Image 1: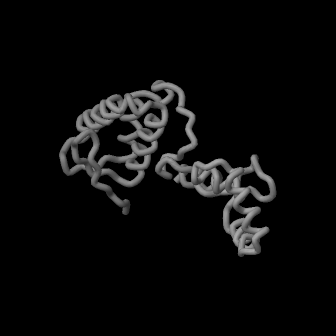
Image 2 (image 1 turned 90 degrees about the vertical axis):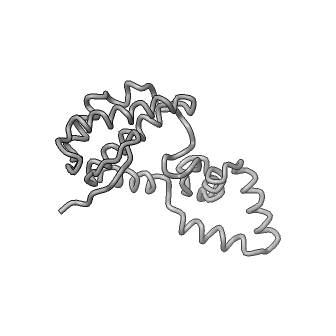
Image 3 (image 1 turned 30 degrees about the vertical axis):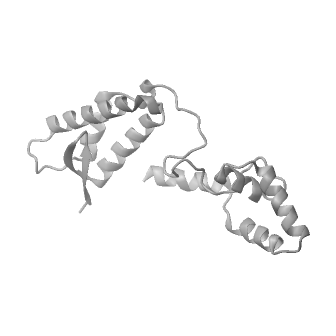
Length: 169
């Protein structure tokens, strides 16, 4: 038994099994990562083409789009690499213009807590470090907060491993 999802692709409603949905979602996200905001019409055109190709494959409106149909459809449209190189940004598709809160491998002074906060809040890490030092000097709970965040925040490599595992699913 498989889960099905009702999805709107190119302004047409489809019933899609979960695996096919993930394939199409990854494909569209990969293309989206290669386009500028000014090229949103290209993504709309790709979605419309996906809808047309899926309609050709379905023999009845009650039929469910399978993973194999999704693979064939994306193969007919082309690889995402054909839409250009990925745009380099500090954002993640799922984090709404912010990096996931983690301790980076580089740009650390002690444990990377201030650097991770700076990246997440899009603030210069030096400012966060100054605030942290002031909190320690003034005798507030700054030391304890830093230690707790050091323990609780995952390292960047752990977050990458987790995201890679989710992408494989």
